[in-house]
Image (cartoon, rainbow, N blue to C red; front, side, top):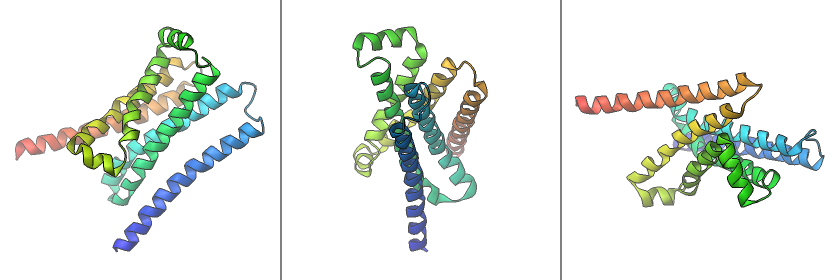
Length: 204
């Protein structure tokens, strides 16, 4: 039984990495073939941002799916999904810095001041940074109970990521609203579970 669960967990982790790596390979092929449309920088920026948000949403879905289905082995996908979300968001930030502000501090400050959606996007990335750094078992042991508190930063990060999209959207409101509604439902379910556990502890 234990070996079967280990194989399932290994398979789930492997599939998660395989899907993400395949996406990266596909994007690299598009770059090599110069097949990114009339504005390749914008295409790269939108693609990496969208993939990062999908990974973040998927990581937030793990706990509700695990609790509702009893498939506790799904928990092993949460860390790789979170790390891939951070990786895609980091690419998103690097593409913006290289393609739009050309690593100019003055241009970056100007963009942050004039375009609030860029500010909230950077905030989302900054909130995920310590989570990526402390995602290892070594850090979890070192931080103890503080580790769990630290990793609740994923919730405001998800909110800022959705705001980043909603604030700048001009045409595809459906997709932006879909991301936001899904994130809202996931965060709401986590809040509900937290409040219910707290009420149960008080009742005891």
